[in-house]
Image (cartoon, rainbow, N blue to C red):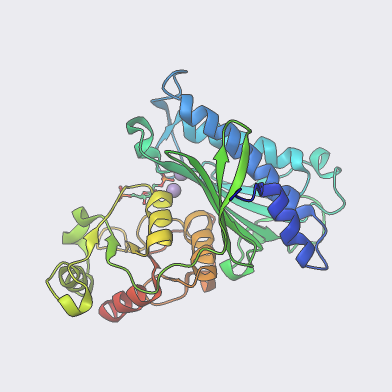
Length: 335
Ligand code: AHG
Ligand code: MN
Ligand code: MN
């Protein structure tokens, strides 16, 4: 039976038609992000050949080595977003301050009403080892009334997101997004250069048998978390334990596997980093919107991620995200 040949753009337009007040701008913005990520995907797949491997020697605001692909992905996305004309501001992990979109690009569209947050390249430490990496994005409506966007436009709670998604550059290039009407996944067919519908209305299993956490930090965890992880590894047939440990070190790859198969991803705060390592605006919030749309749960151990009020573009948050019942179990031990 011929599989429906539904391209990402066709699907976005069909979805847009369902919402009467849609202007088509969000659809075009999503398509612009997809196009930029196809370009990034090309470079990711050729990085070794054209010396994009290795590092630039620069450091980003977090004091992390900026890998060439981080910069390349950031530049590609910013350029595509400015040219789209739909944005008034852009925020990125690779830029200390937010980037107000220049007036000359804003003339293209009446209101330039969107803000986009990016993690241009997630899992950077895995680039040179050819392990899956990705791009994460989050889209909001502007609050300010006109002109270039403001910091206030960029510091909105995750519940205000109008869309969120990620692209994984792995054995194939996959794009997963939501605009609040379910979670849909597309696989890039490089022969035609189109993202084709692959998973419609993804739902994450309520309970899983997989947990993802960097056990190397065990000595820095609270007693409650140690007890929980020890129990996940103990033998308890009724509770389907021991769980399997799966941890790639690229959030998007761990998240995507857990979204499809079920699983609990944890990046907790610890004695050294009380807010953990992951960033609220361009890692936790977009994935939290996706997992909730898929019937899962995302908290910082007690508070819903999407309700955390951001105070800083790069603020970190502990993250417990995935199968709802597993997240609820973890929260009981953290209390
Ligand atoms: P980024 O490459 O954007 O900085 O993100 C890396 C993050 C995330 O992808 C992953 O889950 C986490 O770092 C792994 O951190 P640890 O190596 O500390 O476990
Ligand atoms: Mn990241
Ligand atoms: Mn990154």
